[in-house]
Length: 281
Ligand code: AMP
Image 1: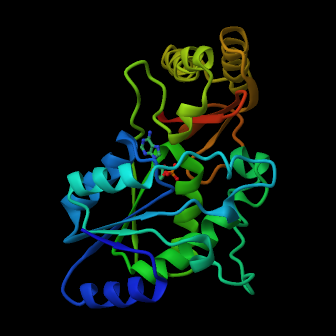
Image 2 (image 1 turned 180 degrees about the vertical axis):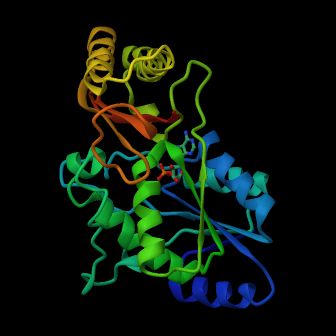
């Protein structure tokens, strides 16, 4: 396994490899867990070469967000990647990726006025900008993204289509802890009692799914039910509970077709997100 920190070297190697190999790309911010591993395993199955980027991208963090406290453990990430058979880790520094202020940025204009796009202004511009750079450096045939960040999947689908990147996006289902909490690098920053309460987010999603299966079609009733559940069972503050069509993230009058139920809850040091995508007749 190779570890590359230099952008020129990364691009030169990708160009060379691409002549005779397919490249699967897993972009991450490191502190790898089972969710990331699922993406890596799928990439390995479907491509000759698997490249994992580990880069905590400052552009996608707001001024009051957790860039500084975002968990990092590069050595452990290296051994995990080695064990998983990753071919290349791309681990540039911030100065390597952004040696001077960018003269051009990518603006994510659609699908960003709701959910995390609304609560984290500029977040998806940062994601779209870094991925544009990474796509040019890594030249992947396929990119693997987790459905835990469903809005990211929707936005990147737009980025790939609008800018004609010759890349296939492969969404991967959310990997959960045994108690249902979606795996996340940020979970380590939950207080112990918050860690106990956090699975209530997934339980609320499951309860909503059950209600829908029993015939509930009202968005308002479902949102109220989820909000009550989370307010009563956790000490977190709800950032949003919203239901939209998926993947276009449009407002819907009632539950019908492919929908996403998405939740964000702010705990003391961590904001957790989770979602469920359902197809309803
Ligand atoms: P991150 O390192 O948090 O930026 O995540 C890197 C990639 O892993 C993104 O595509 C995430 O959606 C994905 N990911 C993170 N957590 C999970 C999870 N629990 N299950 C599946 N994919 C995940």
